Length: 182
Image (tube, one colour):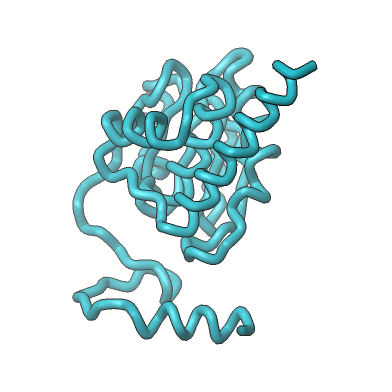
């Protein structure tokens, strides 16, 4: 099945809903005010595009780095921004961003704070934060997912991203088992 056929197949499963289009025809705007990033652990914040556009709040929180999984760069001259173009669809291989995202977060935490954002702060950015915490805190997907969701209720990685995180868990713990054997 081609990539286009996979997308068309997934599209046929979608439910009808009322939408508001903002800039690009495949982004759905949630009109709920969501302009305050949520601190997940000290120094790591998770939020939506509204939070990322709230320059006053970002400065107040001491954000120095922004890991942006939305398509428009923010262009702040006071923050270091890394942009990762990633679709929030189940078949997108978001794990290809894990290593570089984790490195960026580590660099930010050396002497600053980082906001990880996407459109709604629910799927793409949450997946990255969850993967980072799984790796650094050596915790499984379910425990880490519940922890992050408890901090930010909107968190809901799509099913494909959840499967990627479950596979990442196996990879992380397989590496631990190999280290124990040596």
